[in-house]
Image 1 (cartoon, one colour):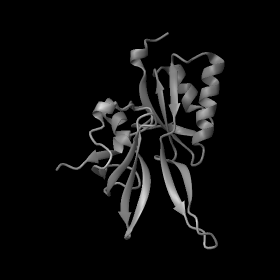
Image 2 (tube, rainbow, N blue to C red):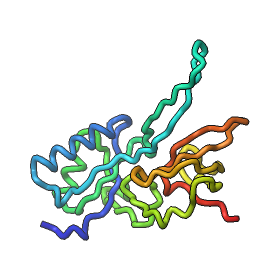
Image 3 (spheres, rainbow, N blue to C red):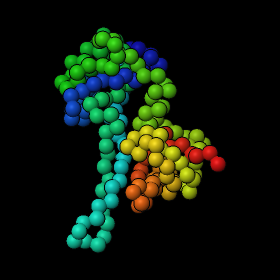
Image 4 (cartoon, rainbow, N blue to C red):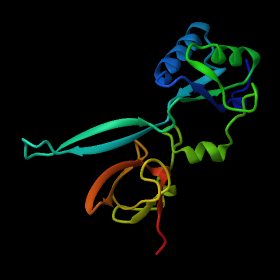
Length: 185
């Protein structure tokens, strides 16, 4: 077995809509062949969003929570790159290839992994850098570039609830902590 320190994050491209199936298939092969040390994690980067619906017949508002794929048609895989692991992933139904020049997969750098703001990137409470009530700038996702105010912070989910002003209305959103930056006073 290889050393765990050699496991890196790679990006596999999939057919549109096959992300979940690819994840399940890879995990099943890893389990069946006992390759947990070689292919350690398979993730689909998700962003939790919350929309408010106002039905015409009803007075009450309904909140609808969704997990949206940050990068449709891509799956992140933490693995030790060998001929065998490359073959397993590359030949999984729905995978079109790895991200990288030609057929050579290129691992993500630690900085790139941290910038993704995916749920596997743990942010400690000390490194959040903002508190409830602070004005923040959104640095990624569908609200990229918007300013908002923090209403709550959830360290377990690594998310913060914010309110942004859109089209003259206050709009609540749940954003990954790593995609938020406090505005300097």
